Image 1 (cartoon, rainbow, N blue to C red):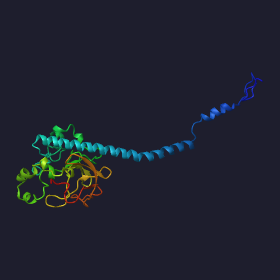
Image 2: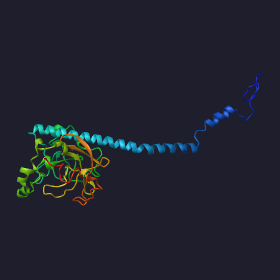
Image 3: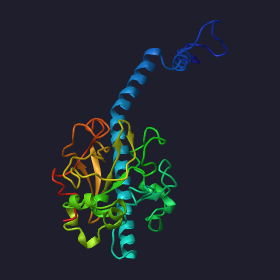
Image 4: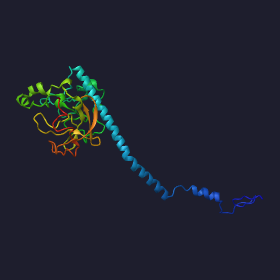
Length: 291
């Protein structure tokens, strides 16, 4: 029997006007695409996946920034050792003529006290390839035109104990008896020798730093809990890596440390805890002094 089983059509016959085969109806229904409900379901699934993945991606990005930051600190430390090898085993100067001139830092020199520091004129320039090494990828000052340590890049140096003698315990009386020029010549401009740093694995050399005005600005130094006179200081270690700060120790190893403690407010009246500024280690300068 010569019939087409699907529609029971005889040879030579044609479908009635306006009729469709079941195959044609199936093809037409498949060609209509998603319904509104189906589309909303897909969008909802995508939104859920994004919500699940975003925290992981953010954490991975922060971990990568912390790793880059640690590499930067190691390179700064290596440059400091190369400097010491070229200058009679002295650590790089933290500053030069800080009171009378205030134009020189361990990371650069500026033409006047309101201009940014220029890396190319700094003491570490011969040993670092680019100024970007001293910029933490997780720290961007709110306004790069505000601050008194412009272009230091977000890393600080333990200048009181390593880059000068201003933080050495017992020098408070001597400092008060000296003229400015004598202070700078005998204390402020004289860094420590590498051999003066005892137990270097427990002494802070460089770290993530900032200062709150209350807005965060770049800051060139790691401040210890106490100054040479025993007074409390304004903390500058910045715990910006998921509430940890990268610390480069005097033996060259780098760790991410949590905040040990902080003071309520700094000299500018800013809330240190809110700004994530504080200290590592005990409160007696044990991790910040030479011996």
